[in-house]
Every structure is written in C-alpha cells, then in structure tokens.
Amino acid sequence: MSALPLDEELAEFMNERDWDQFHSPENLAKSVVIEAGELLECFQWGAEADLDRVRSELADVLTYCRLLARKLDLDAEQIVREKLAVTRGKYPVEKARGRSTKYDQL
Image (cartoon, rainbow, N blue to C red; front, side, top):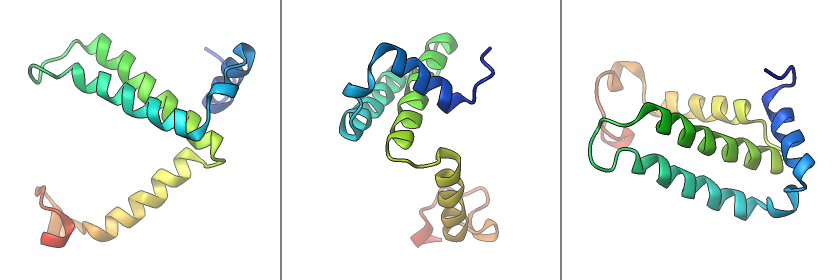
C-alpha cells in the first residue's frame, strides 16, 4: 500500500510512464464512458456478475474519473459533495424516501 494520497499516486503512475500527454480532458471523458460500458457489460445478461470483474471495471471507471477531475483542477470529493447538496434539495427525504420518482414529479 502506498503512503501517497490516491490522486498523487495516480499522477505518479502516469508521470512515470509519460502518459499525461495522452490525457486530454476529451480523451479522459471518452475513457470514462468506454470503461463504464465495460462495467455495464458485466451485467449484460442478468443481475448476477463476476465480482472480481466488476471490481476491476469499477476501478477503471473511478481511475479515469479521478484523472479527469485532476486534469481540470477539480477536487473530486468536493464536487461530489456539492452535487449531493444540490440533489438533497431536489429530493427532500419527506418526499423522496423509498421512491424512484424524478424530482419534478414528486
């Protein structure tokens, strides 16, 4: 286990291989979608999936998301918390609990 924070460890890994040159925001966004498709493929024929494969594909999605956030100088945890605050406002507990209804239909 590395003592580095995850984003720093990812940056070090990419820098050692000189891969940053390939990591434009556009390419990273494409990679997020490609890897998300591979994650979805784990569930293509049903709800049961090979957990090891899911872990691997999910790690790829999360890695590219973190790399994209870093490339755009965004704090991944901060932007998730900001979005969560917005979503809390759209889906108040008293209206949304146990329901999958879209916020404008609550």
